[in-house]
Length: 256
Image (cartoon, rainbow, N blue to C red; front, side, top):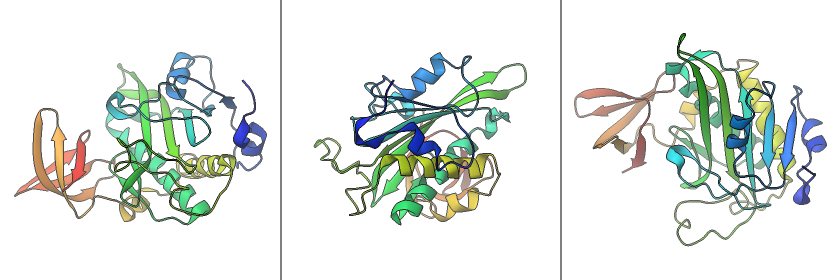
């Protein structure tokens, strides 16, 4: 473990935080989520793991997440949400709003949130959230959760396979800052919503990329078209398929 080139630095991050966190920084790791999962019984809640590079970064449904060195933020936070399984989407919603709030604060960019875990900038994916849980089957309560955050920050030429899918923050602005500053902002906004209980659901709805739009829903082996009409208090997406109202908890969606 060491301080990194391109200014990833524990002290620089910690000095701007409202609440104290134990922070670990790696130059390269397979996955920050995987690392925390392997150490879950050794770490305190609030521990944050950040890496300059992930060699096996992944997102929802184990899809590969490009995590090249020096260009992104790849971090995971260990928390105890103490919530029921059916409430777990709220943490993904909360974290998405924290990332949105931080990017808006630092860069003043018009970021949107695509249900449930994608961060969108100019119609392209700039980041994503992946929450992984450890559940007490006796109580149906989530005891431990790892909140993974991946953001494309620095200017970067994406490979042809991703050019029409992904972007980075600095590909869309002339503002250049250290990743430390953005990481500090993300952590502070996360703590604002998670620890201080500031309302985040309204912000999620106001900045939704899907509400009011016609979407295609992929749910297990079924595909159907619907209109996204609301997000409920637990973070579920409410859609209308013809005359039928459906609550989505875990589905892939795309804009028609």
